[in-house]
Length: 144
Picture: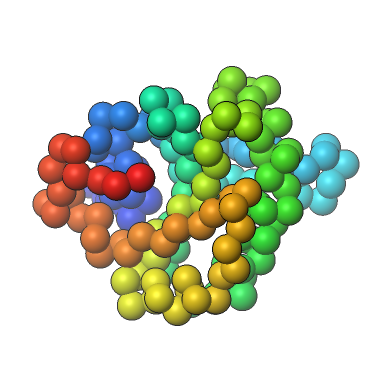
């Protein structure tokens, strides 16, 4: 059986028993006439009890300019993302926290964090891929 890092991230996200996921969720970010009206994040994670939606991406890429552009697109369309989530899933209104979660190599976390401007409307958190191996955690292990 082949396992990808997206599979490992998915298993890590649901291991606490409080997170629901949708891999490759069609997330409408723009108007239908826009050139890119839909994004397909690697995983959309919803934590209903915490009212938190995480847009998750998994990457080994070293092209940080591309990563920054993707983050900028999500941030530029946060109102459309909220509206889409509320319309299709009934989650994501202003009572819900929305955030981006990038899973990247450990060696790159600090460099990437320093290159991304903070934005309270759609904060970004970077998690080292090496830290989510299934044998390194137990139930109730994770911070938000």
